[in-house]
Structures are given as structure tokens and as C-alpha cells.
Image 1 (cartoon, rainbow, N blue to C red):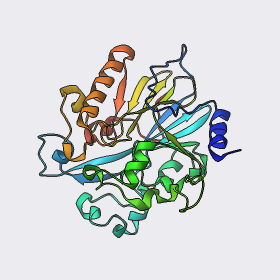
Image 2: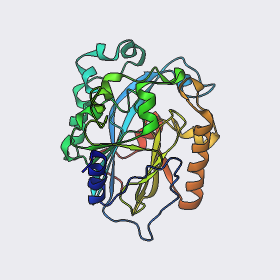
Image 3: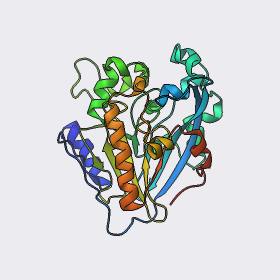
Length: 304
């Protein structure tokens, strides 16, 4: 059995299927009845200090603000999903791993923000995570993918290409050491190392409409969102860096193009969120909005 088929079979064992046809766009496959027993945990994985204007068009860059680094855990009856992995825990002891970014972003580097410590709040170890779904591979979102060797990593093929060989306007926030382990050696076949699924589109992860991964080129060529449907709370969009602040959607404020590979794609994401708000009364959780993040329930509390 080929490696690719083995991975796909593993996914099917937990009730999912990969959608690898280029250009495939999954529509709103909402189940007739909400899936019961799903929980969403919001984890505070430290913070960065940055000028708001670096992220949002026409916002001031001085004084800088402290923004959270949020990651999310979804416990589904058929598996546990980690959306984003935060900043690489190596920087807690060795700031030189980030090079100049360690001073530019001044990340919180206390031991309590380590991903192992954060997962322990909800009784998990890295090996308990079934799927790791990075929104993209920038240093504060894909930093710890290497801590999950027994999990299935799900990324867009375009994100992997851009991470290893980035476009000029997206090259800064990638750190090769975070994800270099995902590739085998020069002559190894297949090139994937470990359980890595490369998507070229959307994926209904458990085939029940409850956890839908959506490819959303905008912030990077292979950025992805998760549309999560909870039995009690309803629909929540986990945005990664596709949407930085809540006011971006509410006031239709564009991002700063410094960190936007395709600004039009980001504006389309605003419209998509508004569509889900109109049709499913959806909410959306961002990773970096300091005011909104304070108001969210934090692990070990949860949404269901």
C-alpha cells in the first residue's frame, strides 16, 4: 500500500475523506442535526508586541500594542483537532532561534505558554491530538508542528510551497526550522515525512459538516479557515490571520498589504463571514484581537 493511500485510509477510519482535486470548493455541508459532544477550547499561547498599523490599513504603528497568540482545540467524538500551534517553544530558552524577530515582536516567553503546558490544562498531551490544522505556517501559527509526530498534519499544498519558497512579500514570517521536518531527504519517495496530508481545496474533516477546513488564499497562498458547528453555541469561524480584528469585518477595514499576499482574498473572507452570520447566525474568533480575546472563555472552560 502506498504512503498516500495509507494516510487516506487512516483518515477514513475516523470518518473523513481528503479532497485533493484542484479548485474543489466545499459548500456549506451542514448536518441536518448538530453533532453532539463537540467542545471548543480557546488557548492563550502567549503574546506578541507589534504596531497595529503593521496588521491593519491606516492604523497607527506607534505605540505598539500587545496582541494574543490564540490557538484552538476541538474535541470531536471521532478525534481531537488542534487549529494552529503557536510560536515555537524553543524561543522560551533560546531567543536566537527567531533571529531579529525576537526583538521586533518581543514575544511572551514564559514556560507557561509552552504548548505542552497549555494542552495539559485540558488533560491532553501532544500524542492525544489526532489532527493538527495550521491556519498557515508563519512563525506564530505553525511554530510547534514538530511537536506532533504522531498526529496527522493537514495543510494546503500551496502553503507548503510558499513556506519552503515564499513569494517576496510573504517571506519574512516563515522560519524554515519550524516545518523542515515535514519533508524527507533529497531522494526519498514520497517527499512527505510522517503523516502529512496536502490539500488543494476544502475538507469536511469528519464528513458530518461539523468541522470544515476551507482553503482561503489571502494572508498567504495557502491560508485556511475552520468553520465549526457546535450543538449549543452554533457556527463559529476560526479565522487565523485571514481576519486580524473584529472591526475588520464590522467596518470593512482592509489589512495592511505588508502581510497580505492577496488583499482581495481577505476582503472576500469578510463577505464570507457576513454570509454565515446571515444564514447561520455565525460568530468568528480571531487569534490576535486583544479586546475580543479577553472576552472569550479560556481553557479549561469551553464552548459546546
